[in-house]
Length: 498
Image 1 (cartoon, rainbow, N blue to C red):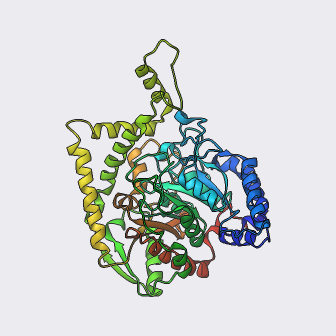
Image 2 (image 1 turned 120 degrees about the horizontal axis):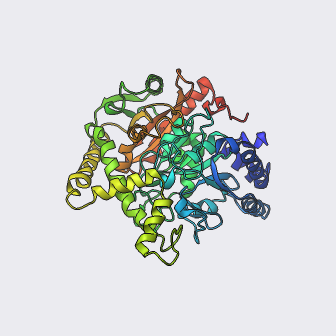
Image 3 (image 1 turned 60 degrees about the horizontal axis):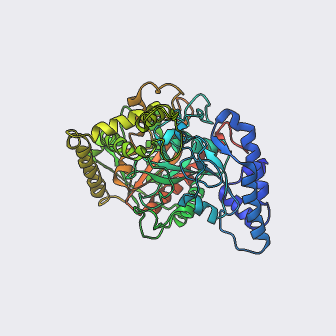
């Protein structure tokens, strides 16, 4: 089992393609691993063993029939429980959708199947993707494999924990304000937010429609690029989908050359208030890039200081609108429908019982920001700030090829430490939010362990829209140099499989 699980996704895909190992064997190994460790990690909400094995056997039959397989055919993947799946429940970790079985697959789900990936199950998350710690799930608290008393990030913490605990070689996530990059950073993984519109949102339960972006998790840069390529591309069913080729992310991941690349350090995202070990590893990585031939340039993006405030008006406003559909009338939970109550009473009782505290908080914030007399002062002003942030990015990319920052201000914090302090929780997304507001590409790659606590630190790389390949190019160079010097960071995890 350990021999299969220790392989990278690219290596496993190659071994399946070459007949050295079957997809059924690989899938069985990962399912057994889930049974062995997920009782402590709590990464998965739904696992259907026979469904996964049936998918694996289908891939093995295709190979036996002489069919040419893709690079990830037969490779298992963990799937965030925000994407609809017609063969298992989709709940978005909310009581209001408990047990809901979708009648169709999301586009991301369908493309995983088309590429031959085997979906092991659905991963835990903050309810409706609202949170930075996966403590807001209605079902369980997911734990960080590096230290099970700490959070795995959020909202895609189930996916990050599954990959970091070697319960899956790959996972999907969604990034609305950093919900792939932040968990990737605190779990020592690679996590990418593609250009907004680069991957389809069709069948992905909406939080904030102008921000939500599907993306990959992996233990190395090449694996992340392969998964990114597998599910991305234009989708006519998504009106925000970009009709353009997928950037050459796999080629960039294999290249990993930064000689002559102009790397901009965002002054506003390198604060004295950040954890000392995070800043230390970040600046060491800048020195590393400079030694590889990159040109380091410090620059200012002054509107980034207002990004957090703007985001926490725009995102709740959109969530208030999107979650209005959960009204107890069409699908999901229904409370109090005993024939004595009006539709309005049933709706109120259902939403009160079905939504958790963080979701309610954001619905109320958003409804207030959109209300008559406050729209221009709050939501309208936030959208103006969003325009200024986009202009700061555009101006920066005129003089540099990529921008960089720490992914998060701190390493993973203890479970429960910020659960009663929403503002402290929101600060976890300080560095990641600007890219969501602007819609450009960004990625987090591990850059070492913080010396004060021995926990992973993430290095964020941001590129212009549809220049996703640049993020993979820089990430690959960082990964390659650090691995040659120190060995693979994930190998130092307590849950690593040799």
